[in-house]
Length: 165
Image 1: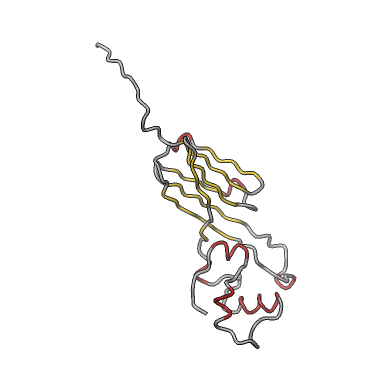
Image 2: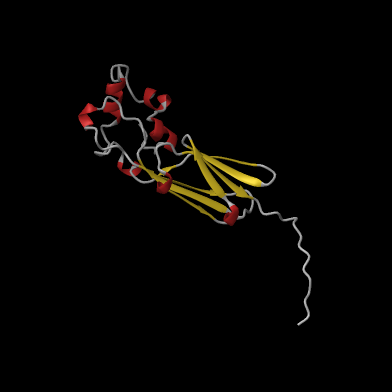
């Protein structure tokens, strides 16, 4: 198999691309059940279950769209406490960072499958329009983080009166 870094979604769900595995395995070597698949995919991984290059921050999957007055960013952050999320917004970028903590009370030998992503994640996005970072707000509901950032109104005019001193 190619030494290709898996996407955040593949690591989050534990998914694998079938076409990558079908071309490199013989019929006898294919796993017959989920535990064989997990054992096969965990061979070259560290004790945390991730390959060394994957133990860094994962890339967060996002949706971004606009309304006439706002840029809206949505991402799934289920299992992350609000105090473990950091959002930095400038006039043209947004960075979302966080960490999903794993429940360490379960012994490794008691797992049948381990497909959830645990650890640090981040994503920096260049916004399609200039925004007003001071007026942005974020909410979380059922694991969905929604960030609404007002666009700069470039057509707005302000009449300035001159005062005599």
